[in-house]
Image (cartoon, rainbow, N blue to C red; front, side, top):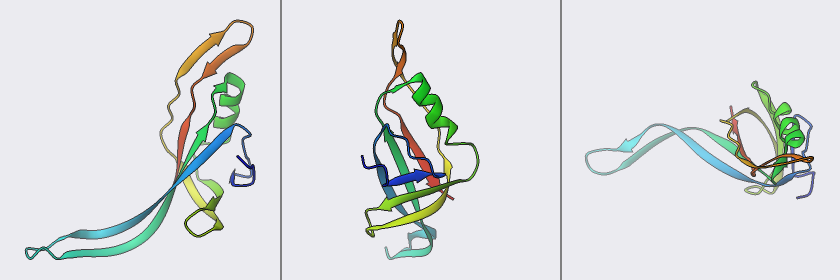
Length: 120
């Protein structure tokens, strides 16, 4: 994946294999009335970026999560919906990692990580 497509606080890991972009419409009081007519009150649009890594060794996993702290995160990404770069403020979603192997003399290898960064 070209390294200039996404930056997290200015950091671009070289072991990303890609990312997904979800674009949400947030509404207030959405629903149908007794006649079946839909009523929506749009209040905002938000993005969720899902980072996808290659399998990671321990050092890479530790490096990756050291750049995704538990606070507001600035993310710059190429937005396929508008063909432009966007910069958004995000928080990190839940973290989950699976162990694949512990290679003697080489180290622990973890499965691919999917990490969500959700716009505030």
